[in-house]
Amino acid sequence: MSELLQYVFIGLGNGAVYAMVGLGLVVIYRSTGLLNFAQGELAMFATFGVWTLHEAGLPIWLALLGGMAIGFAIGAIVHQVVVRPVGDPHQKPLAVVIVTIGLFLGFNALAQLIWGTNEKEFATLFGNSEVDVLGTLVDWQKLGALGILAAEALVFWVIFQKTKVGLGMRAVASNPESSALVGIPVTRILMIGWGLAVSVGAVAGAVWAPTPGLSSNLMQLPLIYGFAAITLGGFDSFVGAVVGGLFVGVLTDVVPRYVDAFEKMTLAPAFLVILVVLLVRPQGIFGRKVVSRV
Amino acid sequence: MALLEVQGLTAGYGIVQVLFGLDFSVDAGEAVVILGANGSGKTTTLRAVSGMIAAGGAVRFDGRSVRGMRPDRLVAAGVSHVPQGRGTISDLTVDENLRAGAYSRRDRGIAADIEHWYSVFPRLGERRDQAAGSMSGGEQQMLAIARAFMSRPRLVLLDEPSLGLAPLVTREVFDRVGDLVRDTGTAVLVVEQNANLALAFASRAYVLEAGRIVNQGSSDELRGDESIRQAYLGS
Ligand SMILES: Nc1ncnc2c1ncn2[C@@H]1O[C@H](COP(=O)(O)OP(=O)(O)O)[C@@H](O)[C@H]1O
Ligand SMILES: [Mg+2]
Image (cartoon, rainbow over all chains, first blue to last red; front, side):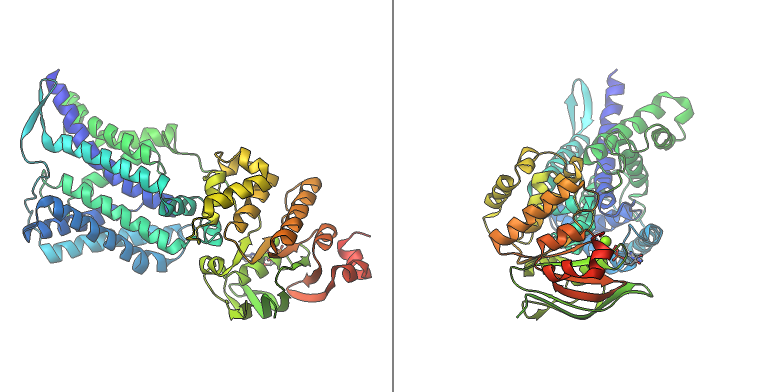
């Protein structure tokens, strides 16, 4: 029992990272209607920013804030310089998807070029101690990940529901043309969206990095789980990303421990989730069916 | 000097030219209609004026060239555009649609303006927290008009408000916009197929055919014109 609980907490802690990756994916999906295949690599790049600032002597939490700012700038620049010139993603979806795949490869190569191919040790945000929860020892780092996810969800809610920029982002996601006509600076809004996505990616990377160590491949697994998370929760739903991420986290950490068939295939439960959801409820649990506009 | 002055306007899509040098103008506080059949280029004209598509020729608003200006800048300059199909931002509530309409503003009067529009259109007030996309076509048209006025424009471009509306509802829309022109002094340029209502609403009219203006005059003159009667008034 307490062993199961331990796996559940590990799963929730990891799931929090998938949820954060999912949040970034949802931000971009809502404004472009596309999956951003570069989400993981952009996050990894920003995580190297955190690492570099920490190496330079900043405390890890300050380094994280700095990395988020770097991530925001990277996202904004990528949108302005690479994504936007390709054209309207609603008109040319394939071209934009290919660009995000190109970004994936480009940022991976660039990270190797700048920081080498050796894995770097990455400081934990919450130290290495454990805490007793219901008779089970749980890493502070896993609980902390859940706390950060909760804070992020709150910040997202405030930004999207309570601020003018958030209103602009929701308007642009719903009807970009009409948004421009009512006076919303659509390009700037999209740029902020990309910045926000990479910024949360930096947090996801910094929470994830201590376990596998920091390398250019850091976010490839979390990206796949992030895809599974938003497939389950709905590509356009922030709530869905959080719930889906936590569910996928628990699923992929618990199931392989008890089901022999999955022991050597820890990715399999995630793919099963994607497959089943796509068959049964393609819009995801919290997502909405695409309604055609009048 | 005219509020909106358009000379030699050309526009198209890719290699297909749609507009072949239009001249028209709208004075401050004036209601003007561009009449045209389906496909004559009405929507393209408004899209070219508000910078949604590339255009040639001269477009001056308040004496200043605004050709090619980004739509959001143009809104800030004082031109609102209600697109064909009403441009409802479906996933936002009615209230949020109105706030979106005030996006270019930085003053503190926005909440009071929203309440004002709820008193003008009580149906919108009743539905303020409802997703805008769930309202009827007529309600969405009222919302689009109120939203366009939220930026406190001096000119509103209105694209075929009658589209998809029952005749009675269309009549009400025109009545309300007519009231607004009179009460607020805002100029309105409407493009329409429905000549009856549009000529009753506007003081001046242009007739657009295949991307060229082929006739113009006061609404009364055009109502009496035999070719107009045959082509647009069904008599
Ligand atoms: N997005 C577009 N791409 C290509 N051609 C278009 C597009 N929109 C309109 N057209 C063409 O331009 C012409 C004028 O269209 P439009 O301005 O929509 O006319 P109206 O609003 O008077 O019905 C039509 O021949 C139409 O087929
Ligand atoms: Mg039209």
